[in-house]
Image 1 (cartoon, rainbow, N blue to C red):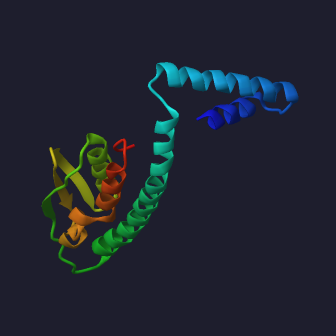
Image 2 (cartoon, rainbow, N blue to C red; image 1 turned 180 degrees about the vertical axis):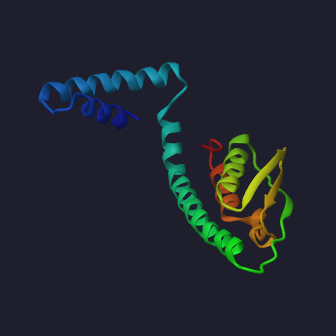
Image 3 (cartoon, rainbow, N blue to C red; image 1 turned 90 degrees about the vertical axis):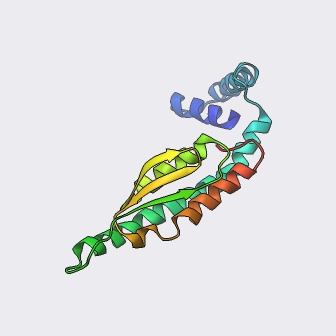
Length: 158
């Protein structure tokens, strides 16, 4: 966080001089001390966020990949003549510890074309799929596995 504060200081100043760098180091240190003291932030929490960032980047990669794949599957499904579409309402259970993981999973499902999260009741998800083939493996998807890995680390999710 300290480095981010310092980089923002340099960017907002628009130029790099000795005075700006020295003053930026002091201001960044004071701001970092303030958030650690009064906003319940700590270097330990920052380290936990850094450890989770790898999983979050993996999650983002898989989300983008699934969105692209589902786009092509949905186009094929809707543009193929004579194809009978079988919509499905799927219920499945997850075992997440917090609401942030449920929120991320529900929004990831909704962002993926052909599927919409209808409801989340506790650990149960109700998902509408444009076709039954789009619902295969949704309860044990890579999203669920990555969110469980993130939760299993100390400090919970995100």
